[in-house]
Image (tube, rainbow, N blue to C red; front, side, top):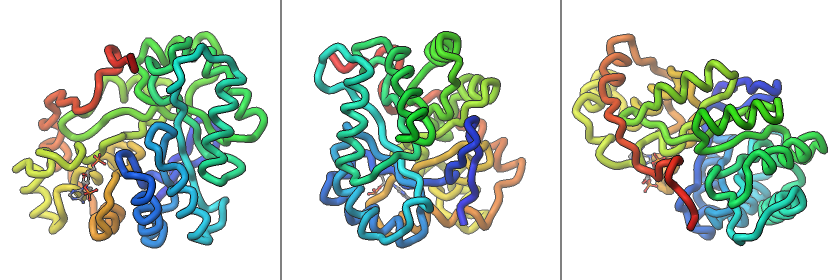
Length: 278
Ligand code: A2P
């Protein structure tokens, strides 16, 4: 079973979930169905992924009780209009509708710069949705320390989670330390470095050999031992299964030290300081 991590609002999130970034809507149904049947109970999607409908159908068809699931989606401003609390509510309702749910476990501001509107105003609207019980926990994604500080200083509501890019060759030590200081859980997107060169790394390969595991499992284990919440993505059933089979072995301090040396600041996604939807 996947352990839970406790958030600063008292709720819990499974430490490992299933991510569906870049999974087309029709494939998301199959992938989420596999993940749920294998034992995943946390699913991470986003309005901009375009797969909330397939994801929601898979959830409904699984027959798993709603309170055993943890469902995350994320707010995107794709319309270019200036937003109010009402606009946020409209987008939230639209996501819930596509997912076929009547509440969310976690709602995230997807990118601070994608809002075309002050993210602090958006955050206040998030706090209202939570007060109404429509979402259990609220957080952000791709926020930097200065942006987190503004939100905290101006609203006194600390995001439960900041979902950011983290993998062994992009370990984000400063941002993770900031989270730890403020009681924010680090959730890692692309925890496997998007399945690229990282998984061929000779250091990971040596550690994988030692534990009789795959390099992907070693990378995921590193996250877990750091305390990160992770949402690896795969559309391949044997990998979906492999990625959850990471709770029956442990990296030792030597392994962890060797993996720490892999941090090369190797960012794969957009730089949050520069990214703008344009
Ligand atoms: P696929 O979906 O074709 O199985 P991340 O979560 O870091 O973004 O990584 C997702 C990418 O990594 C996908 O391309 C996925 O491929 C690949 N991947 C996921 N799990 C594994 C695994 N256990 N071994 C190798 N590649 C994997």
